[in-house]
Image (cartoon, rainbow, N blue to C red; front, side, top):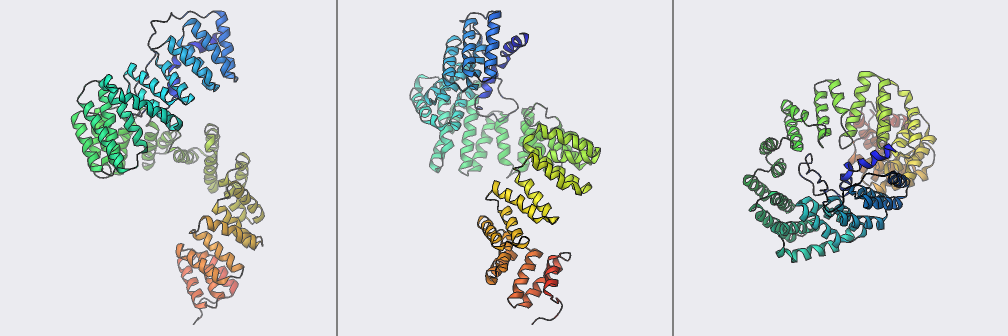
Length: 598
């Protein structure tokens, strides 16, 4: 019972969950310091919360169990009933989450309406009403709820957040646009901040779909007018409107390929008032045209806002491009663990340690890289370092833990293990592939890898079986089709079947030199020497490869053009002296490469 009570009390701290479930508001340029979530103000009109009775605790336990085991509608009703009885906005939140978990639209609507009625100033109640309007497909009500919330909080993000629902449900757009038009028509009766905010939202929505140059120019002018009007006024809301409209102006100018004008707009804005977000935008526009100025602007951003970690990271990357490691390292090292950019910083610090041959320091940093753009590369380097520093046993332990934590990357971890074990235990690779495919039977990458290995070991039939599975999973895999077709053509005695598969591969990738070589060789095997010559000449023009040269030379030889064949083979042996393809062909045809052919 005590655990249930603690869970109920914990819902007070969970009031931001509902906001977290909603689409992300218009993203701040500084992702590390978003505006703190507004907590629900005390509802003076509502009675104070009463202690839970034993019966209420039992009811809430029943509701929680019902929610956990799929009875979302019943749980929502129970929570709402108890919330109304004791005047608890936290229990209204629990009811809303239970209704959403159970996808019970009627419960969502009923709970949100009662929550707003009992706690009209509760920001989460208004957000819940917005979500139920979006779920209902009522774009007009969604906008009205967002506008009411914006007016009460003076927070532009709360208004712009409503527009994010349109990206997930386009059916909301007509009603939402109609409500914006109505609000703009009534704008004279609204404060200036509301007028500008609604106009800016309208411009932003139109900018998403604007493709005509004239439309983008009109919207850029609209955003510029808002920026000027907001810039003449004071207050936090006006400052936010000024920044957002300036950013929209710059976005539209860059879409119009008027980069110089966009730079001028940002320079003028940052001279007008110090603003880290706009100065950061200016730096990003300057990177490709004036790196030195971009670096200076980023230095200014970091000075103006030391918590702007994205600017720190970008400045450090520019320093690293200039090989100024000493300047980059402290910027990266001071990005804290709670920052959105910490993982990127750790990756770069790992690379720096690698350059310095400090393997243990590199390992420390790479292990702190989280799933994201650099994770696979960092994980690969982590595995290599653990293997080199601590041996195979520690590597195996790390690998098992990574597969448990990041099951979506199991294939990449198996490939890493194959790569690292190849140097020390090459005879175990087939057993490792068997184990990997027992866990990931649909992995076309692993199947292709095993097929190549089986072919190298002379098990053509088993290799072909793996390739058939690849084609079954991915019928448009040109590489698998070509490999399987060539194997049937050259090793399994199924020339017609092989030719058909290679033709399919060629249709999917008509300029692939390896496939053209296979197709040319298939035509040769089937007796079409002229067709083979055309395909092999094309393959040879795309790829300087000894196997292609050996095939093309043999076609020339059969076409009674020995001079061309021998010249081709001689050149191939000069470029690839260790190749067996040309030597095998020459020996089979009993050709004296150094005789005279006229």
